[in-house]
Length: 277
Image (tube, rainbow, N blue to C red; front, side, top):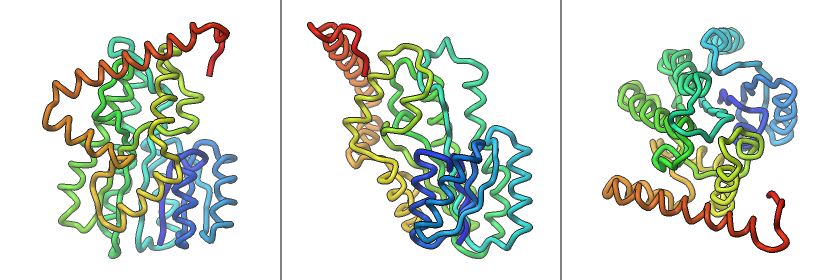
């Protein structure tokens, strides 16, 4: 069994690669940071899998095509899991502040699927695509326009792929986890610092880890499930929005205001001036 995992040098990509390794997968560990991917490769091999570091800039279609050609020359892929991990480093930004660079991020998953879908269709096993979106795809939280739009696009693309590839036996899963602690929150650019603090609070409340999300992804592939909302209560959030969309958005505004006001009180409390998390 062979997998292509992008963003394999850290975070969810690394966790997914290591989880697959425990089942004996051979994994193409793709990342623009090959040193980080090499560290993941050592973890993969220690967990019982086989890894191969592949440099890949996921934003460049030509690099996806070159990756496919390199892998095709090595061996016939019997079963392939493609995990396209969108590494959006700017999760915060208002609609009117969105840059061209942020808008281009929405094309990353499309590039990966375009390069690999025909290959997947030709495989005789149970090929599967895993796209990583976010609960932000339905949350529409203010101050996160570029991130929200990107992740909503990943959900729509995954749904379309599901309808197109079902006759060909190719499975599709879209992961929609709440924020959890990765380098995205710690190292990403936020329009305002309080956005980062709100994201940290949501990550704390979710109780998720990269390893838990990776485990959910593997289970979803085995069950051929399209949607995965995490944590478990997130599915109720999704259902509530579908039934009461305007009521849901009003609750989003109220919750963000509550978190912002709570954060402001904490920062201005006696003895906490200047403290940052």
